Image (cartoon, rainbow, N blue to C red; front, top):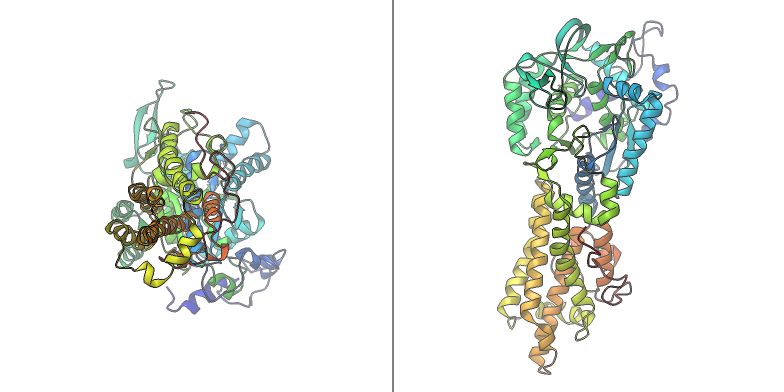
Length: 593
């Protein structure tokens, strides 16, 4: 590993196997001709997508989704977690935060799926890629690039990455025998397969213990990556970066996997069996292994290897990569090893999440228990599904998807919680929110010794919430952060109900009227802070709540979640209407669904 950031960056952008900026080899002998690298890629540095800035953009990625089948709720959950993390950074002021998502379109599984569909493989990929891109857009995911492994700049990046690995001596050719899963696109050792009875066919078959997918014995000659030599480097990296994988349970799993020993990794397939992929540079008889191909997409986004040193350093490495627990080995063992082999900076953190299940079984198209995410958003609304999945989705443990749960969360947290609170405050006929803000924004009034104990307790709670939410988000726990926000919604409702400001409005006494304004102010201030914090989770509904409260768009960043930070709100920016009107944040459900 080179010592300085500058050295690593220069190695990162060298375009020749000699690690020199200027190729001195005759073109006929050069393994990676500069003319080939340059051809058609004069502007590829722009794939980094961001201007060079002093502050490194927060770079977050979702996995690229396999296009052998239509998207399901699990894909949506991964996208939402990624989007919430990006929007959180935008909320904190990192306006260059960058999100990458896309599709993985090579490999045996795609080839067979296209053959089964009796369609051209590229056309098959185009169709399914559009579905995943539509899912991201429908769910209001603020991605900066939707990458496809069939993109030309990605293909060039993969070819260059392979040449660099080969030049450094990490690739060799050898015969490989083992159990291969087409579904998982991976080889499994004998210890990780067992004999099962397929309940649908009654057939006995060998399957992966981890995934349950069928495996078949294969014997072939292909290229291997010297993964075994990275055991100590990986273990040292895990030791030095204990928060590398979230949650800790999966960090422990990966450490044990590496401690038990690493075998070299087969990284190509004979093109006689697999034609749909990127050919091995210099050997058309082999196709690059789909997982090596796919993982490189994350660095393609940074302009690898074409971008200027400054442009790619501004983005690489990723700050967080969001993945499902079923692909943790590929991302947290293979991917860091590939990067280490080329002296490239390794991803800072991985957020690995659990699965969504239905009736306690993992969603699977073959089983027929998948949830169509488009139907779910059409049925309940985009922000409602975003809220439900963030609120109930599992990081450590699997979560069971149920329409009944969505209805329950809507009634309690959204309609009866936040929606009810906003309506009661902004539509109140016996008080004026703007007058309350004007009076109580005075420092002496906010900290008045005359404050009732209930108001004092609520103020203390309110002041603590932003820091608690920030801590949860820094720990990559959006679910916990959302629960903290909603706890404030519930406690504010309780405070408002117990304070009964509608009764106080009938008394002309100055002290009573001042306390009335304090209650309205504290309730409005709670809504303001809650709505700002909810923007990453429910961007449309949070914006509507802030409009109803009259918060200026320029005052909706995290820095304004401090108690009393905004003294100008209180006059609605939109028509508050009447109960049940278009101005209602969360109307009653039309049915029980």
